[in-house]
Image 1: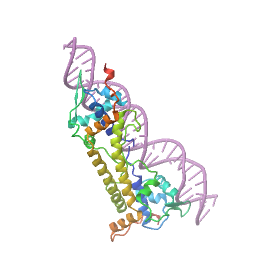
Image 2: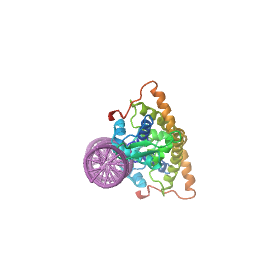
Image 3: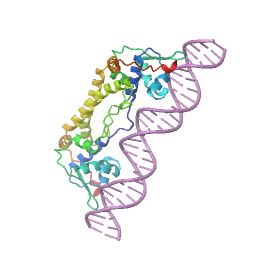
Image 4: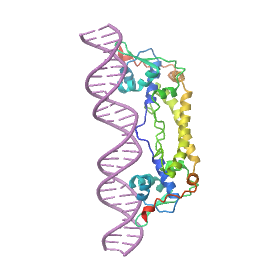
Length: 152
Length: 152
DNA sequence: TTTCATGTAACTTTATATGTTACATGATGG
DNA sequence: CCATCATGTAACATATAAAGTTACATGAAA
């Protein structure tokens, strides 16, 4: 399977949007992310449904942040994507008749479940606001890159 | 991406082998696992190289366990498979120029690394012998299924 | 009513695991 | 020595899922 980078992608979009007033068109965001506008709309769809962002059609339309960044965690964003699989590995058969396979599954599931739980917990500790703070620290004195520049 | 079930599969094979004297042909093992002999050879190749199992050609040949089951952990077996990716999610770009992406990566990497480390640690706590003990507990009074039966 | 922008379905591409076929290599038994 | 058995491996096929692309419908603004 290809590695899933939707969480990484959608966070990138949100963080860009948080740095300057919107709205942002899918095309603008796609250019900043070096991808396709439809991909942007796709990964943003879940966030729109939950209400983290809004989208408007027509002239002056585009995407706007519609939530309190200090209240939304990376885990929330992950959930908005539809809780895609976290682990690349899994059991051969989920409900096997073979006792050998059951023993193997039991051992692996313990490890898998623990790892998933920790990952979700860690994502739940970080808010979008914290991500933004970290970004501003990294930016330091540097001027922020205006992703809407080409609209001029 | 399809879910990787090689660890699950190879553990199933090893545990079957540990229940009765060998050697076992790839075909016998494949039948017990409902898969193809070549798949068995493929997932066993790494274990053979490290010396956890041996394989012999010709009449009476096949696979034999060649290690102390109480000394080999699930993590060792995982390593023998070549340390395939554990997480289904990853960063869009691994070494980005964009500071926004760097901030996102940093946050995600913390969570990802912690989860991977925990998973590996958990796998490292379980030996093949412990898996075998658990299996025998599950078997209880039941007679073990002889996967070599069809050879008669 | 033209232009812009999203919404979405359908299709293509890419990556990766898994399954299959074919054949070379080497060991055993006659 | 040769037929048989079994592994080793390359090459190819299939399955699944993410990412990219095209096409077009919908609706808002100028």
